[in-house]
Length: 501
Image (cartoon, rainbow, N blue to C red; front, side):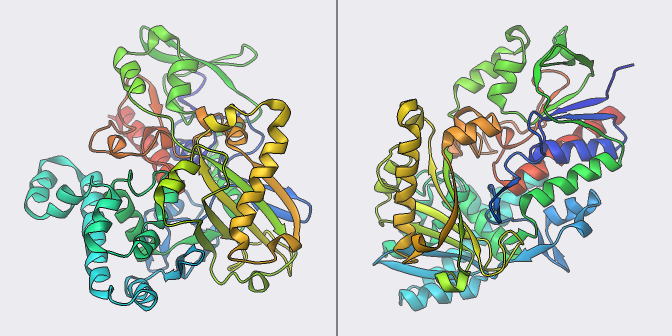
């Protein structure tokens, strides 16, 4: 008898939901995590009198009571929904380009259109048509992804023309057909930050689906942050009889006759199993954890065709002022230095002053991290790791803090006097992300999410290239909190069904 029915490598979002789903489904499951806490990106940490949220900016997939969305359903299925308090945001975001654009979009189709019309008159009918296209493309994409099969393909050819004709076009191309004003286009494309590709490279179907999800089912935070969510799922796993080992890393996924037969831990301990779910990156799983002889040529060819995705530079600040005193009327802000996307793209691979930031004020609708009268604000700009890998170690700290100043410079154009109330600061570069997550390039969304990564062209996570090995997480599909949490559970359900057959 094997030591375990399944071993899950990594307690990130997908690893946690996979482990909990497997154990609750009757599979004897071991969860192995090299860090000392669960969550991966879904964690928090303490500096002084502040607790800092590591990565969650807005949580999708929850939905209101009476109008639940899929992620709330997953938390209910895992028995943790009543342990989590979701805090609804009433706005999508505030989009700002100092001197050119400053508009807040409510989480409502009509409200968002009216806000943009008030700021830039003459666009209302175009906005209504554009939002209608977003809804149509999003609904057909969700249907096609979830259902598949010949029946859906026939329906797509008859009624899903919007998805087929517009889905893979760049966001910029679609926006250009609807709007003449670059300010409107910048405001509508702001959510590209959550997808990792600027509008000129991002397939329209991805932005349309994200907008649809947040408008129809609203953006949320979690009281206690993403760490509360990660801990709740871990507790559900343990309550069902699962076992977890922290401070433990897998050195090798062992195979025999081409199929999984166990894992070897760092230190030499070997554990037998015929099923491994890896929440590590696909690159790490196939090139470091498996012997080369066990990796099919098709996998090597596939990996060579893909690009490591973008990482993040993040500045966490504990501020001795309330959101109202700082001028934050909504939680999420996308601030660009310019309307010129080329300058923003250049910033992804340079150390010139930050051209774009996502600023999150977690205490507009408090989640419990900052003491009374204070605020926790994080600033993030997307960057690839290669620019930081070129920084000499002797100059790393100086370069890191000098670059952090440029993020504050940009936000101070929106919130003057910010520096005067900074009490605590923590700075993470893509190299920090790489170290904590173990992801190549510190990638936060997995592979670059351009059109070639679409579900239309890539195998999903249910495809097993090595018998007994299953990938779960951003590197096997789409990045972000909702997609990875749901992916882990989906992989686990597929595995349970297959083994029950």
